[in-house]
Image 1 (spheres, rainbow, N blue to C red):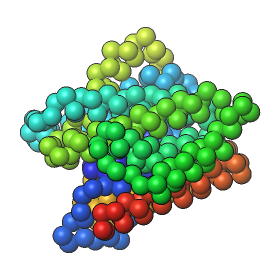
Image 2 (image 1 turned 180 degrees about the vertical axis):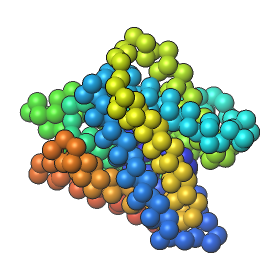
Image 3 (image 1 turned 30 degrees about the horizontal axis):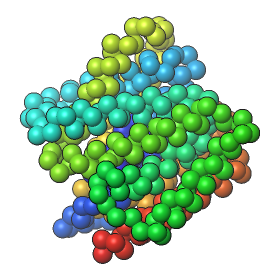
Image 4 (image 1 turned 180 degrees about the horizontal axis):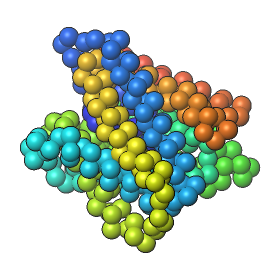
Amino acid sequence: MSTPPPAKMTVAAPVPPAASPPPAQARPLEGILWMLLTMFLFTTMDSVGKELQQRHEVVQVVWARYFFHVLLLAIVMHRHLPGMMRTRAPVLQVTRSALLLVTTLLFYMGLRSLQVAEASSIMFLTPLIVTALAVPLLGEKVGWRRWASILVGFVGALIIVRPGSGALGIAALFVMAGATSNALYHITTRKVSLVDSPWTTLAHTGTVGVVVTTCAVPFFWTEPSAGDWALFVLMGAIGVTSQFALIRALTVAGASTVAPFSYSTLIWATMWGYLLFGDLPDAQTLTGALIIVASGLYVYHRERVRTGR
């Protein structure tokens, strides 16, 4: 939730089609496997976050996710970090990092009350919103077929959210808002990829999040148990590993090959929801999710037709 690397780091959302061509010596199968691993890790991290929210406030969980991610990245990449932090687009990098923080907070606020599969399904709107916002923000032209597909995708979201029924309530609205901020995050990622390397972008990804949440977390702090400290560190470790997996996927195969496999999120979200919380998505959630996935895949297909790939 994600084209040029690194993409969405905190929530398990699909990766929109990229504008960059695949590498000269593409290895599609390897790239697909890396993308499947990426989506598995993203959803695992979100599931751990939902588990921690049963005992800690959202701000503390998000702080842990950012703090240990940045800490572990600094430890692993300490020799290269000064060079990675040099950017030719500081305003864009800060904006992108801030959008990621907003996305994370909104998603986790919704995830507190929703099933993992429900929240992940709503986040599937991200590529459709990216396509819609690409018109005013990137100056791209979107034909009637893609507009129709976007509208169908939003119908799928309404099937999941069930407005007026009170089934999912304000939690679903938080996640829908998160999908919108996530789309803006992806668009900013596209722009910054034109001037900075993926590794520079990776180094800046959590900067705003770790600063803001470190300032805020004392007001929301509850003492973690030893097991919760381990889960906090695990979230950071998964964050670093998932970003490495995503960069590998986009390096060996290119986004145009691996993007559709980001929808495997629904499989992992359903699995973790059942194993950790005893939740299974109902028929309406699955129906809406499949409609959104089909719409996203059609938008992806039209993107390939438009670019001739």
